[in-house]
Image 1 (cartoon, rainbow, N blue to C red):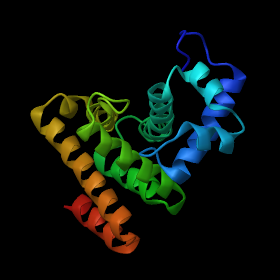
Image 2: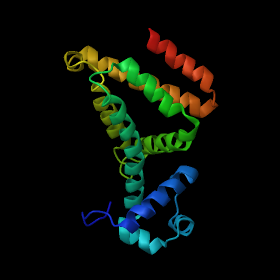
Image 3: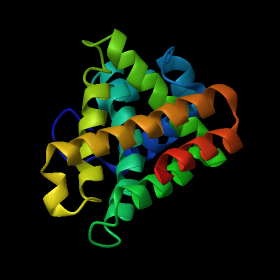
Image 4: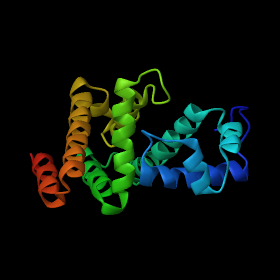
Length: 189
């Protein structure tokens, strides 16, 4: 987080958490340091000192959002050896579709989309890295022999695509019942 490579201070961690809560409510697309700083009890100068630049702060916020996603995936895949893609997909869908995570999922979509249209900005590689990280963690849900095959890679890619498609549809429509039924139908095949 800090530009010096030293561990973050308690104040930096506190401000990042406050900025993260703010970004979940307001998004990142039009982030302005003055309103953010005022809302979290800081100043633009302090934020620039701690994060190096506005882009540095955005990268820190994206990393913070990703940490929530990775903690879930690690918890699910770490419960047992190779629980199976269907088991993990169902748990992921419950987590992704929960109403209390709507703001986080909207932030994820925003960051993912921005990384596709602004590949040199603070969003750089967010979408690609997101796919790689999720595929790597989904691989843990597969038996070792399957995960190393082309079919294993194709299955986890299909699961990831299905979850992301369902999530986009859910965020667009708010129809949890229909999107959950669609996810379940695909997992039952």
